[in-house]
Length: 67
Image 1 (tube, helix red, strand yellow):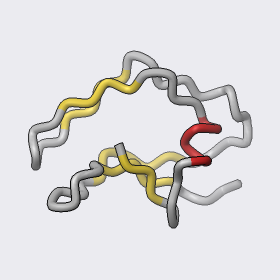
Image 2 (cartoon, rainbow, N blue to C red):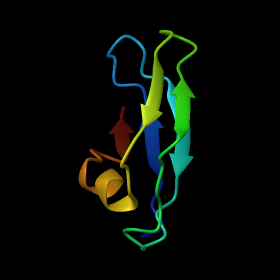
Image 3 (cartoon, helix red, strand yellow):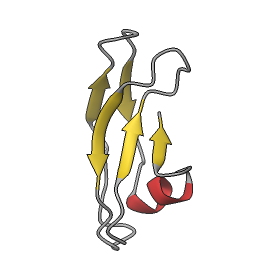
């Protein structure tokens, strides 16, 4: 479980990298409530709610999670 998950903007013309996440194996250990991400390229502001490590892993495609 040491593979890297890239958290990126979901817009096709943007694709900016917000952060990298390295899974720990504790599916309920990560809780991202209250974290706000701002895309400086397309000007979107994202507030992450109810995200756990399990959700990140389930929705990752080829090592990339798009929000």
